[in-house]
Length: 291
Image (cartoon, rainbow, N blue to C red; front, side):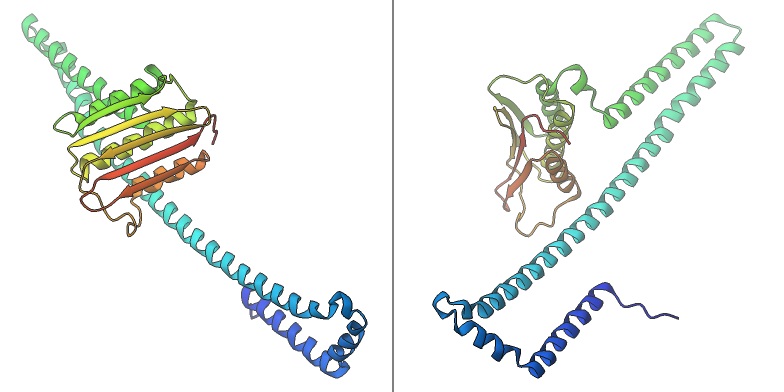
Protein backbone atom coordinates (compact mmCIF):
# COMPACT_ATOMS: atom_id res chain seq x y z
CA UNK A 1 0.00 0.00 0.00
CA UNK A 2 1.44 3.32 -1.09
CA UNK A 3 1.61 6.04 1.55
CA UNK A 4 0.02 9.29 0.37
CA UNK A 5 1.21 12.56 1.89
CA UNK A 6 -1.26 15.49 1.95
CA UNK A 7 -0.31 18.29 -0.51
CA UNK A 8 0.16 20.93 2.20
CA UNK A 9 2.46 18.71 4.25
CA UNK A 10 4.35 17.70 1.10
CA UNK A 11 4.94 21.36 0.22
CA UNK A 12 6.25 22.05 3.71
CA UNK A 13 8.65 19.11 3.43
CA UNK A 14 9.96 20.46 0.11
CA UNK A 15 10.46 23.95 1.57
CA UNK A 16 12.26 22.52 4.61
CA UNK A 17 14.48 20.32 2.45
CA UNK A 18 15.37 23.23 0.15
CA UNK A 19 16.20 25.45 3.13
CA UNK A 20 18.41 22.78 4.70
CA UNK A 21 20.19 22.16 1.38
CA UNK A 22 20.83 25.88 0.91
CA UNK A 23 22.25 26.12 4.44
CA UNK A 24 24.56 23.12 3.99
CA UNK A 25 25.80 24.19 0.54
CA UNK A 26 26.23 27.76 1.71
CA UNK A 27 28.24 26.63 4.71
CA UNK A 28 30.48 24.46 2.59
CA UNK A 29 31.02 27.06 -0.12
CA UNK A 30 31.13 30.13 2.12
CA UNK A 31 28.57 31.80 -0.16
CA UNK A 32 27.67 34.58 2.27
CA UNK A 33 31.28 35.68 2.66
CA UNK A 34 31.85 35.61 -1.12
CA UNK A 35 28.60 37.50 -1.70
CA UNK A 36 29.56 40.16 0.84
CA UNK A 37 32.98 40.57 -0.76
CA UNK A 38 31.39 40.93 -4.20
CA UNK A 39 28.96 43.56 -2.91
CA UNK A 40 31.66 45.63 -1.19
CA UNK A 41 32.66 47.21 -4.48
CA UNK A 42 29.09 48.51 -4.91
CA UNK A 43 28.84 50.05 -1.45
CA UNK A 44 27.96 53.41 -2.99
CA UNK A 45 24.77 51.86 -4.38
CA UNK A 46 23.94 50.14 -1.08
CA UNK A 47 23.71 46.79 -2.88
CA UNK A 48 24.90 45.04 0.28
CA UNK A 49 21.56 45.87 1.88
CA UNK A 50 19.66 43.76 -0.65
CA UNK A 51 19.83 40.45 1.30
CA UNK A 52 18.17 42.03 4.34
CA UNK A 53 15.54 43.75 2.20
CA UNK A 54 14.81 40.52 0.33
CA UNK A 55 14.53 38.67 3.63
CA UNK A 56 11.97 41.18 4.91
CA UNK A 57 10.06 40.94 1.62
CA UNK A 58 10.03 37.15 1.85
CA UNK A 59 8.69 37.25 5.40
CA UNK A 60 6.05 39.76 4.31
CA UNK A 61 4.94 37.54 1.44
CA UNK A 62 4.78 34.57 3.79
CA UNK A 63 2.61 36.56 6.21
CA UNK A 64 0.34 37.65 3.35
CA UNK A 65 0.01 34.05 2.15
CA UNK A 66 -0.95 33.01 5.69
CA UNK A 67 -3.61 35.73 5.81
CA UNK A 68 -4.96 34.68 2.42
CA UNK A 69 -5.12 31.07 3.58
CA UNK A 70 -7.15 32.04 6.65
CA UNK A 71 -9.50 34.14 4.50
CA UNK A 72 -9.91 31.29 2.02
CA UNK A 73 -10.72 28.91 4.87
CA UNK A 74 -13.31 31.35 6.23
CA UNK A 75 -14.94 31.73 2.82
CA UNK A 76 -14.98 27.98 2.39
CA UNK A 77 -16.76 27.53 5.72
CA UNK A 78 -19.22 30.26 4.73
CA UNK A 79 -19.94 28.60 1.38
CA UNK A 80 -20.44 25.22 3.03
CA UNK A 81 -22.86 26.74 5.54
CA UNK A 82 -24.70 28.50 2.73
CA UNK A 83 -24.95 25.30 0.71
CA UNK A 84 -26.22 23.41 3.75
CA UNK A 85 -28.86 26.02 4.51
CA UNK A 86 -29.94 26.26 0.87
CA UNK A 87 -30.45 22.50 0.79
CA UNK A 88 -32.43 22.76 4.02
CA UNK A 89 -34.68 25.52 2.68
CA UNK A 90 -35.27 23.57 -0.53
CA UNK A 91 -36.37 20.54 1.45
CA UNK A 92 -38.57 22.69 3.69
CA UNK A 93 -40.23 24.33 0.70
CA UNK A 94 -40.77 21.00 -1.01
CA UNK A 95 -42.31 19.59 2.17
CA UNK A 96 -44.63 22.61 2.47
CA UNK A 97 -45.71 22.32 -1.17
CA UNK A 98 -46.28 18.58 -0.84
CA UNK A 99 -48.35 19.09 2.32
CA UNK A 100 -50.47 21.76 0.66
CA UNK A 101 -50.99 19.63 -2.45
CA UNK A 102 -52.08 16.70 -0.29
CA UNK A 103 -54.15 18.53 2.31
CA UNK A 104 -55.99 21.00 0.08
CA UNK A 105 -55.74 20.35 -3.64
CA UNK A 106 -56.11 16.57 -3.42
CA UNK A 107 -59.15 16.95 -1.15
CA UNK A 108 -60.84 19.36 -3.55
CA UNK A 109 -60.16 17.02 -6.46
CA UNK A 110 -61.73 14.15 -4.48
CA UNK A 111 -64.73 16.32 -3.59
CA UNK A 112 -65.28 17.23 -7.25
CA UNK A 113 -65.18 13.57 -8.25
CA UNK A 114 -67.68 12.64 -5.54
CA UNK A 115 -70.08 15.46 -6.39
CA UNK A 116 -69.85 14.61 -10.07
CA UNK A 117 -70.72 10.99 -9.24
CA UNK A 118 -73.67 12.14 -7.10
CA UNK A 119 -74.95 14.39 -9.90
CA UNK A 120 -74.60 11.60 -12.44
CA UNK A 121 -76.60 9.12 -10.35
CA UNK A 122 -79.20 11.59 -9.12
CA UNK A 123 -82.75 11.16 -10.42
CA UNK A 124 -83.95 14.51 -9.11
CA UNK A 125 -83.00 17.82 -10.68
CA UNK A 126 -82.69 19.68 -7.37
CA UNK A 127 -80.31 17.08 -5.97
CA UNK A 128 -78.17 17.21 -9.12
CA UNK A 129 -78.10 21.01 -8.98
CA UNK A 130 -76.92 20.96 -5.35
CA UNK A 131 -74.15 18.53 -6.25
CA UNK A 132 -73.14 20.73 -9.18
CA UNK A 133 -72.95 23.81 -6.93
CA UNK A 134 -70.77 21.96 -4.41
CA UNK A 135 -68.54 20.75 -7.21
CA UNK A 136 -68.24 24.32 -8.53
CA UNK A 137 -67.30 25.58 -5.05
CA UNK A 138 -64.62 22.89 -4.73
CA UNK A 139 -63.33 23.77 -8.20
CA UNK A 140 -63.05 27.44 -7.18
CA UNK A 141 -61.12 26.49 -4.03
CA UNK A 142 -58.89 24.29 -6.17
CA UNK A 143 -58.20 27.18 -8.53
CA UNK A 144 -57.36 29.50 -5.65
CA UNK A 145 -54.97 26.92 -4.23
CA UNK A 146 -53.19 26.57 -7.56
CA UNK A 147 -52.86 30.35 -7.83
CA UNK A 148 -51.49 30.53 -4.30
CA UNK A 149 -48.85 27.92 -5.12
CA UNK A 150 -47.91 29.76 -8.30
CA UNK A 151 -47.49 33.00 -6.36
CA UNK A 152 -45.11 31.24 -3.99
CA UNK A 153 -43.03 30.01 -6.91
CA UNK A 154 -43.18 33.22 -8.94
CA UNK A 155 -44.74 36.53 -7.77
CA UNK A 156 -47.32 37.29 -10.45
CA UNK A 157 -47.55 40.93 -9.33
CA UNK A 158 -44.12 41.62 -10.84
CA UNK A 159 -45.28 40.54 -14.29
CA UNK A 160 -48.70 42.19 -14.19
CA UNK A 161 -48.21 45.32 -12.07
CA UNK A 162 -44.50 46.21 -12.23
CA UNK A 163 -41.98 46.60 -9.44
CA UNK A 164 -43.40 49.63 -7.59
CA UNK A 165 -46.97 48.37 -7.59
CA UNK A 166 -45.80 44.88 -6.60
CA UNK A 167 -43.90 46.30 -3.61
CA UNK A 168 -46.94 48.36 -2.66
CA UNK A 169 -49.12 45.23 -2.78
CA UNK A 170 -46.50 43.33 -0.77
CA UNK A 171 -46.50 46.07 1.88
CA UNK A 172 -50.31 46.03 2.02
CA UNK A 173 -50.31 42.23 2.29
CA UNK A 174 -47.93 42.44 5.25
CA UNK A 175 -50.51 44.56 7.08
CA UNK A 176 -53.31 42.00 6.58
CA UNK A 177 -54.40 40.44 8.83
CA UNK A 178 -53.31 41.93 12.16
CA UNK A 179 -49.85 42.75 10.87
CA UNK A 180 -47.73 45.88 11.42
CA UNK A 181 -48.70 49.13 9.75
CA UNK A 182 -46.58 49.22 6.60
CA UNK A 183 -45.85 52.39 4.62
CA UNK A 184 -44.23 52.28 1.18
CA UNK A 185 -42.77 55.21 -0.71
CA UNK A 186 -40.68 55.88 -3.81
CA UNK A 187 -38.07 58.62 -4.00
CA UNK A 188 -38.28 60.06 -7.50
CA UNK A 189 -40.16 58.56 -10.47
CA UNK A 190 -41.70 55.17 -9.93
CA UNK A 191 -39.87 52.55 -12.02
CA UNK A 192 -42.04 50.10 -13.96
CA UNK A 193 -39.20 47.61 -14.15
CA UNK A 194 -35.45 47.43 -13.54
CA UNK A 195 -34.94 44.18 -15.42
CA UNK A 196 -36.14 40.71 -14.54
CA UNK A 197 -33.17 39.79 -12.32
CA UNK A 198 -33.14 43.07 -10.38
CA UNK A 199 -36.92 43.14 -9.99
CA UNK A 200 -36.88 39.65 -8.52
CA UNK A 201 -33.96 40.44 -6.19
CA UNK A 202 -35.55 43.65 -4.85
CA UNK A 203 -38.93 41.96 -4.41
CA UNK A 204 -37.59 38.88 -2.62
CA UNK A 205 -35.34 40.88 -0.30
CA UNK A 206 -38.23 43.21 0.56
CA UNK A 207 -40.41 40.16 1.14
CA UNK A 208 -37.83 38.67 3.51
CA UNK A 209 -37.41 41.92 5.44
CA UNK A 210 -41.18 42.32 5.88
CA UNK A 211 -41.54 38.68 6.91
CA UNK A 212 -38.87 39.09 9.59
CA UNK A 213 -40.48 42.30 10.86
CA UNK A 214 -43.85 40.61 11.16
CA UNK A 215 -42.98 37.12 12.34
CA UNK A 216 -39.83 37.58 14.44
CA UNK A 217 -39.43 41.23 15.43
CA UNK A 218 -43.02 41.85 16.55
CA UNK A 219 -42.96 45.22 14.80
CA UNK A 220 -45.89 47.60 14.94
CA UNK A 221 -44.78 49.85 12.08
CA UNK A 222 -42.61 49.29 9.02
CA UNK A 223 -41.34 51.93 6.60
CA UNK A 224 -40.14 50.75 3.18
CA UNK A 225 -38.63 53.09 0.59
CA UNK A 226 -37.32 52.56 -2.93
CA UNK A 227 -34.93 54.96 -4.63
CA UNK A 228 -33.68 54.64 -8.22
CA UNK A 229 -30.75 56.86 -9.17
CA UNK A 230 -28.55 57.06 -12.20
CA UNK A 231 -25.97 54.64 -10.81
CA UNK A 232 -27.65 52.67 -8.03
CA UNK A 233 -30.96 51.30 -6.82
CA UNK A 234 -31.55 51.49 -3.07
CA UNK A 235 -34.16 49.80 -0.94
CA UNK A 236 -34.49 50.42 2.80
CA UNK A 237 -36.83 48.64 5.20
CA UNK A 238 -37.02 50.04 8.74
CA UNK A 239 -39.12 48.50 11.52
CA UNK A 240 -39.65 49.30 15.19
CA UNK A 241 -39.46 45.72 16.40
CA UNK A 242 -37.41 44.08 19.13
CA UNK A 243 -34.22 44.05 17.08
CA UNK A 244 -31.16 41.90 17.77
CA UNK A 245 -27.42 42.15 18.27
CA UNK A 246 -26.20 42.49 14.68
CA UNK A 247 -22.56 42.09 15.71
CA UNK A 248 -23.19 38.73 17.37
CA UNK A 249 -25.75 37.50 14.87
CA UNK A 250 -24.49 34.60 12.75
CA UNK A 251 -27.06 35.29 10.05
CA UNK A 252 -30.39 33.62 9.58
CA UNK A 253 -31.29 31.61 6.56
CA UNK A 254 -33.41 34.33 4.97
CA UNK A 255 -30.86 37.12 5.43
CA UNK A 256 -28.08 34.84 4.24
CA UNK A 257 -29.97 34.15 1.02
CA UNK A 258 -30.75 37.87 0.66
CA UNK A 259 -27.05 38.74 0.91
CA UNK A 260 -26.24 36.16 -1.75
CA UNK A 261 -28.88 37.66 -4.05
CA UNK A 262 -27.34 41.11 -3.63
CA UNK A 263 -23.77 39.86 -4.15
CA UNK A 264 -24.81 37.95 -7.27
CA UNK A 265 -25.84 41.28 -8.83
CA UNK A 266 -22.73 43.14 -7.69
CA UNK A 267 -24.56 44.90 -4.87
CA UNK A 268 -24.52 44.86 -1.09
CA UNK A 269 -26.94 44.25 1.78
CA UNK A 270 -26.43 45.80 5.21
CA UNK A 271 -28.45 44.97 8.31
CA UNK A 272 -28.32 47.41 11.22
CA UNK A 273 -29.98 46.44 14.45
CA UNK A 274 -29.63 46.44 18.21
CA UNK A 275 -31.84 45.01 20.97
CA UNK A 276 -34.91 47.18 21.48
CA UNK A 277 -34.03 49.60 18.65
CA UNK A 278 -35.60 47.89 15.64
CA UNK A 279 -33.93 46.71 12.46
CA UNK A 280 -32.90 48.53 9.29
CA UNK A 281 -32.20 46.58 6.08
CA UNK A 282 -30.35 48.51 3.35
CA UNK A 283 -30.03 47.07 -0.15
CA UNK A 284 -27.94 48.72 -2.88
CA UNK A 285 -27.65 47.43 -6.45
CA UNK A 286 -25.90 48.96 -9.46
CA UNK A 287 -28.26 50.06 -12.23
CA UNK A 288 -28.41 47.58 -15.07
CA UNK A 289 -26.79 44.77 -13.10
CA UNK A 290 -27.06 41.24 -14.43
CA UNK A 291 -26.42 38.00 -12.51
